Structures are given as structure tokens and as C-alpha cells.
Length: 375
Image (cartoon, rainbow, N blue to C red; front, side, top):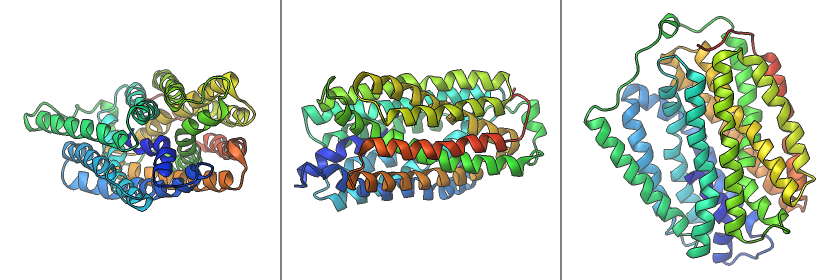
């Protein structure tokens, strides 16, 4: 959630710093790029520290770190200071995916369902970012949109530290299949090539879609509302309802082979994202929901595939590389979007570019080896 506050607050912060209304959003976007780069670049370091120390302790550092970074960012006096604060936030935020996802898939069993559940909670943060930020911007200003969530994260981190200290958090016992996976499974090279392509193309699409939709709704829903609180709420509803696609997909991949599921999810993305380029108002809302359902539905699939081919002792490291690739490409997508918007191409042109990128996810699905169900 905290990584996406800036997506909604960038325009208001730009106006507060004296930027012209016409170009404030495009001019502020580059200051969020270092955060996204470090979000991915620091993931391998986080995985290494978790392997040397402990995963639970790193999650405590994650919550407290992003909370303190968010509160600090709220005191920025210019765009450069916002960029610096967001960069520190990105460093701490890098901990979760290589460490937290490794904890979720640890122990085998119904991995798809667990990943889907974890993904829904994660995407509630994606949904909550424009919602909470929109209301805080309406009631106060952009600074409070960082202060309030930051304090909440610090409290959660300290609470989790208490659970760890008292011994209430334990790793699950591995299943027979998990115990049998003592090395990389057959076909792992081809599977990792497929995952690399999914992470690259998927990161490009996911990074832009989760960042730009709140602002796109402000611009392209004139018959519904131009109020930032209302458009933020609508963006949150799209993200929140679409997130539940992960539960459906997670349940399916626990019972059926992964490859055809990934192929179906991949095929829907270029079609729906491309359609968004030409829609406004109510039709845009409907198509955006469907597009995000397919984008979010892909999330548990890739991590589930990784659990089939990579043993536990290597998962945090592989996840960190996957995440680094995903976020680096995600940062490129924001730079691409900024260039298109600054040149007057509009959100329609941005969606067209994303639709083309999504076609590569289809290719990745075709490359994936055939394998039996997860559980």
C-alpha cells in the first residue's frame, strides 16, 4: 500500500510545491522511480539477510522500516526530498516479497490457495492506497497520506515482533512432496526462462496498471465524478474486487495443471487492456475491473510454479531475482508512461503500449513445461 500512496498523492504534492497544474503529475512521476528501482534492487540483499538471520525478524524490520520511511517522507520540502524518502521506503519494502512469499509457500500443501489468500490481502493494500490517500487528500493534505499509514505500519511491526518474541510464530512441517524436492526439479531451466519472461512483461503491465489507474479515473470519468476522493474510491473498488480473482485461480491451480491456467489468464490481458484505451466513464470502469482481475489472477501462478521446481533453501534467492526483474521493468513502465503522457499521447496510448507488452506473457505461458497439479 505504502509504495502506491505516491501514485495518488503525486499530483497534489506537485501543486503544493508550485508546479503547474497541467504538467504536475507527469513532472512528479520520475521522483517515484528510485523507490521502485530499490524496491527490486534490494530484494536479493533482503533474501541473503533472511537466510543468514531469520525470516520472521526480517518481516519485523520490513513493517517498522516502511513505517518510519513514510513518516519521514511527509516532512519533505521539495520534490527531491520526496524522492529520497520514497527511495528509503522502497529499500525496506523490498524485504516482503522474497522473504514473505518464501514463508507462504513453505511446507507444501495447498500452495495455490495460500498464495491466492496472501495475494488478496496484498491487493487490498493496492486498493486501499487510492482510497485512503484520496480521503486524506480531501480532508487534510498530501503529508497526512504518508503519516497515517506509516504509523499504522510501525504499530503492526511492533505487534508482530511481540508474537515472534513469545514464540507464537512457527514454520509449518513440510509435506512428503516438499521433503522429496531436495534439488531443482526436472525441467527447471525452461520453467525459469518462462518465469523470467512473465516477470518482465508482467512487471511492465502490473507496475503501470497499479500506478496509473487512479489518475486515469480522475481524467476519464467526467460523467461520473472528477472529485479525487470519489475517483480514488472507484479505483480502490476496482482493485479490491479484482483481487479476489487470485482466490479462484489459487484454488484452480491446486486441482489442475498450471500451464493451461496461465495461458488463459495471459490471453485475457492484452485484449482487455487494449480495450481500456478506447473507453471512458462506466465502460472504462467495467473493463478496468476485468483487466485487473486477469492481471491479479496471474500473481499466484508464477510463485506456485516456482514452488514446483525450486527447493526451499533456494526459494528466497530465486524470488528475490524474480522480484528484482519484475520491479526494474515496472520502473521502466513508469518512465515509458511519463514519456507518453508528457508528449501528449494520453492514457489511451499508454494502454495500447501495455497491451502489446502483455502479449509476451502469452509467449511465456507457451514456454512453460507441462507439470502435474500442486497438491
